[in-house]
Length: 102
Image (cartoon, rainbow, N blue to C red; front, side, top):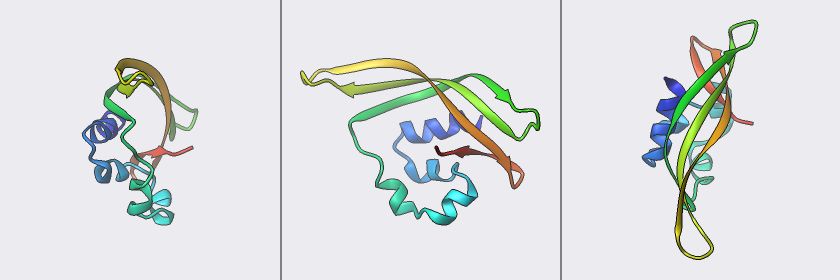
């Protein structure tokens, strides 16, 4: 649920809400303004669907497989709309699941 909610926020351009899914440790050392500066307009996301979740033996680390919808500008000026599979790591800490930035 949290992985899809994070991508919903990113898809809607609500980067402040997406920032809230970063680990508490990441947010401690990375200000919101720095986080926001990494996003441009070359790609537009259309949400993501979780396909599977694989927990490690502790149940505290998860690898989440998602299919991400996107539109990107081609050199020709046309837009390409596609989907691609991605993997994300999530960790349970402080009683909740958090996206782990690589």
